[in-house]
Image (cartoon, rainbow, N blue to C red; front, side):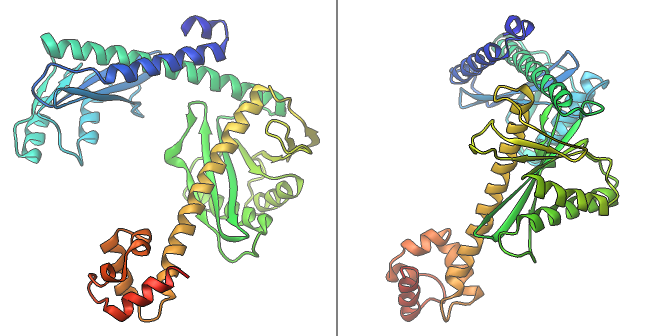
Length: 390
């Protein structure tokens, strides 16, 4: 993988990366000769990347590993980083009987006492393991190093894409932060907008936002985009939060012009805007790119590195918007189906949904089963049964 990455053969390196991930999955299914439930926590710091590999042993079986990349760890001591992870990870969950650490945490004894008190049983923290636990820790360290290597490879690939994007768009500098917006609705109803955020490390999912849009004409995507941009950046300016270096909107010249008007109203004209419209063929990779600072339309070739970056960001924005829209539609459907039944008020709706675990359970229930719910007599049961089948 490293050799392929050095040759800039990124597709080949990605195949090796996937093979490594598959091997890690196989390793996770191996049986472990240890009687106590144990968490193995390995801290790895390489190439400016800090990772914590958590391997969990339950019932004598390795149930898998997960890698965490703590923010703000750069320049901190290893003991402090380990302590911060323990404090955050086990803040709202019970620790297993044994924690095996690659590095002694600051205030380790205090952590042991606090976790034991919270779990109401003894929690041992071991930072110098032997025999089987030492081997498990070595596995976790190796897995963490592989994760860091994958992260470094992914980071190098994304940085290359950001650089290519700057060159293709003719920007004054490489963007550090990109925000992309997408709109989702059903025939103009229950409109949801998404905002996804990317930087050179990839998707910043913790900073994604969804917006339920109201007060707009059904299917008016221009008004929808104007509302979400105004809401998003009015708040960003008010809170003095980080502004993006590039804003991507899903749509062509008209959508872009509406976005430009909104940003002008907010006095944020220094942020470049990029509109992506489906080309004549409406095929992925054949889009028309419109820029707020240049009237020339760009038609990136399907194999353009920058195009792959924007496509990935747009797909993520679309996925996030669709997920929000489906959740909103499901909630509305669940509410309206029972609301329209005479004699079924808020209390009875709540009892029905709670008893059967959701609207599907209510729909599948027989009249006799419906009568088991508090407040539902035979007449109401027949009404509910019939109404949900119309």
